[in-house]
Figure 1: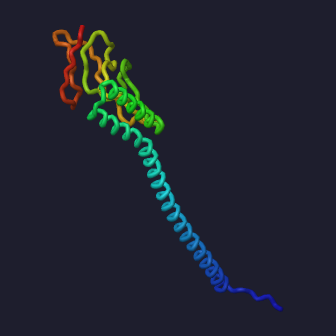
Figure 2: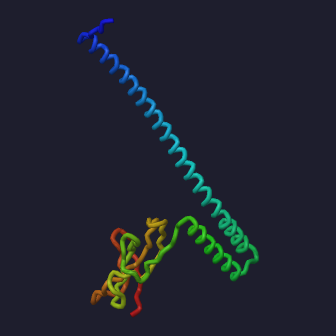
Figure 3: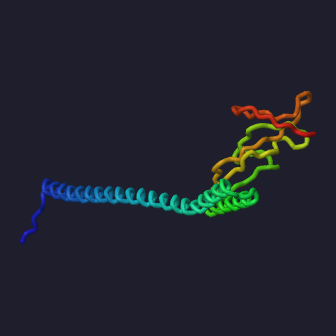
Length: 186
């Protein structure tokens, strides 16, 4: 049997047919990968939503006993509850709420006596004082809270500023804040 020699047109035609088969295969692979990615994206969104919902449910379940204790405290105030009993109940509720927040990674912090750090505190005013070093937090209106390394709410503070001669010792508002006055005892 003699060996048939292929002409250039036949070789090109066979090469074209092979490339066409490869192209179809790659296109099918591309469509399959696209569908797999779309399914993955939907699964991640669903898992993320489930995780958020479960986290919120755990927080709510931990807060429900605190809410129950607030209801009991309010009933005690409207009834014959003594001031001491109400005070002890409020302290219990405060401690319980702090424990719940701690379990969920939320911790309070104080900047009192520290140098003012705008990443952890919001200055709501200044207090003129020679007794405190300048830029030191001398009063805290609200504590700050963190969740892990992230600041959820910065502490709201008053910061020491050197006294001006001839000015009375009082708080000066921070920019864009309403004026507050704090008298300083010398």
